[in-house]
Length: 196
Image (cartoon, rainbow, N blue to C red):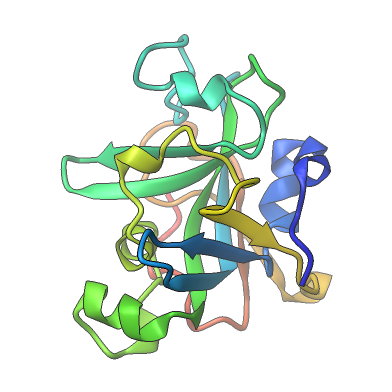
């Protein structure tokens, strides 16, 4: 499989929510363990006209990574207990990112099972907090990009358009009407969260 480069991220954020589906997210741990997950669910967050976005009001120390170059990882701590993984997708200086909501485990499954304390594969990465736990992604990963040796994306066949579903986003209280969530209809690894 071919690594996806910076050109892939020149597409608009809303297009990338769909284009990312089926791609393989790779993390190489410090010990050399290879962890791979196939992206099956995404959500878009745009700084302008999106009150659910962290950068809706202005740039702050907390959200500054969202304004960095496309392909940068934006990891934040949600509700004081979960790390969530986003990929910055707007041109540098403009806030926007795609939240990776769920993946299908592909490689490194024993390591993921140990981290998640379960052997049920559909429970390993079927939610944004589950997948960061399985991958060992924490706040320290925020600001790194997908073009090095620790994190990168591999190209893979895109799903058929008929298999891609659209809905409103999950677990938000503002801008709830925006249909900016994409997921694969046939995947048992999609999160169980209900659209807002």
